[in-house]
Amino acid sequence: MAGAAAQHQHIAGQYSPGDELPCADAALLVPLKRSAPYRAIRDRVAQITPIDAWQDAGLHFFVFPLQQVAGGAVDGPPVAVFAMEPHTRELLSAVVVTPRPGIEEAEVTDLLLPGVSYTAPLT
Image (cartoon, rainbow, N blue to C red; front, side, top):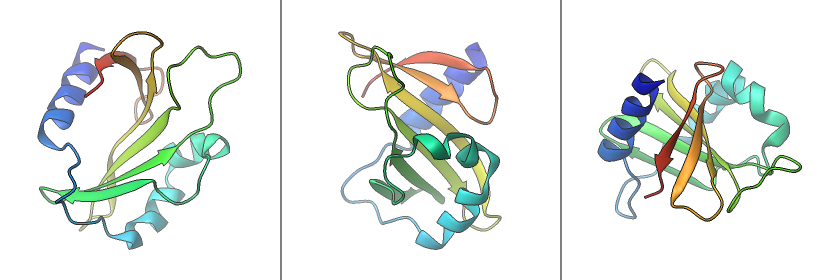
């Protein structure tokens, strides 16, 4: 799990969204929505269009709001964040980020590595 947390820190540090970044290519939503990680959370997706989409350093990012799990103690709604490589249309990262109540951390669940989750600071 330490490797997954380190990878999150690297991605979060290198590829954080900003208002000045160009929009992600909407054509990548087709292969993204056909991917196994997206299908695994499809029932929880609260909105079928991304609430944020950008590209940075050649990668395209998409954020979808998720419904909260019944009985789950969270501090804000969870989101799914996907990173795609546009030329190969390959999904490089897929995580669910769930804010934890009362602290500035979130639980991050890796959808590409089932069973792997870790905490990360909210930025």
